[in-house]
Length: 421
Image (tube, rainbow, N blue to C red; front, side):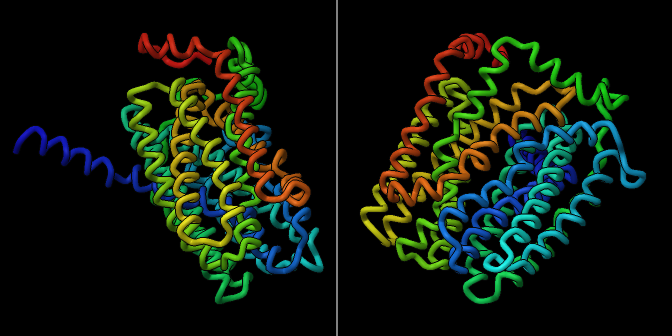
C-alpha cells in the first residue's frame, strides 16, 4: 500500500467518522429553520396579499440571531441531567424547535399577523439557541487538526438545510398548503435530533466557567481588552450589510418580475446552491494563497458587483437564463465572502470562551439581515427595484474602507502569525 493511498484512506476514515457525520447533520439542523422565517414566510405573505412594507418588517423576527450572546453564557454554565453538557441542551432545544415550526404553519398571515410574528419569533429564538450549542459542541468534539474539514462539512450541511427549507419549501408550496409545508419542515428536524443522539459528547475544555458571573463577564473582558476591538465589531457589522439588505427582498422581487415559485425554487435555490458551494470551496483555496486580509478585500468587491447584477435583471425582466447568470454570480461571490468572513471570526475567538465569543460575533453578523434590513420593503417601494439594488451595491463601500484601518493584518499574515483581534 503506497503512502499516498494510505493518506487518502485515512482522510476517508476521518470524513466518515462519527464526529464528522454528526457535524454534517447538525449543520443541516442549524440551516433548516433560518429561511422558514425569511424566504418561505415571505412567499407565503406575498401570495396572501400582504404589503411589501409589512413583509420587510417581518425581518425583525430574526432579532434572536442578533441577540443570542445575551443568553449564550447560560449554556456554558449550566447542564441538563441527561446526555451530557452539550447534547442535553441540544436535544431539548431541537424538540421544542420542531414543534414551533409546525405551529407556525397553523397561523394566518392575513387575519392574525401578530400571531404569525409571535410564533416566528419563537422559531428564531430556539433556532438561535440551537446554533449557540452546536457551535460550542463542534469546537469541542473536533481535534484542532480537523477544525477546517469539520467547518466545511458543517457549512455544506447548513446549506443543505437552507436548500430544503427554501427551494424545497417553495416548490412544495406550489402543490400543497403552507401548513403542510411547515409540518414537513418540523418533522425534518428529526435529522438534527438523531445527529445529537448519535454524536459523541466533547471533552469539557480547561478553564470552563464555574459561576454564572464568570460565564457572563470573562469572555467579554478578554475580547474588549484587545486593540481596536470596537472597530473590528463595526467591520463585522458592515462587511455584508449591502448583500444582506438586497437578499431580504429578493423573493418578492422575483415574484413581481413574473417568476413562479417553482422557477425560484429550481433556479434560485437549487442552481444557486451549487454556485454557493463552489464559491465556498474556491474562497477557501484562495485564502491559502492570498490570506484573510486580501481575501476580504477581493471577495467584498465581488459581493458588491454581484448585488448590482440584480439592478440589471430588473431591466431585463423575467428571463430564466439571465436569472441563472445573476444567481450564479451572486451566490458564487457570496460563498467566497462567507468563507473569508467565517475564517476571520474564527480567528478572533479564545478557546476558553468559544461559545460566548462566537455568539457575540455571529450575532453582529446577523444584524444587517434582521434590524438594518427591516425597512428594505419601504426602500424598494419608494426607489424601484433597479435603484434599490444599486444602493445596496454601494453600501458595500464603507465596510471595505474600514479594512484600510487593519493593514496590520497583512503584515501578520506575511509573517505566518494569526490575524490580530
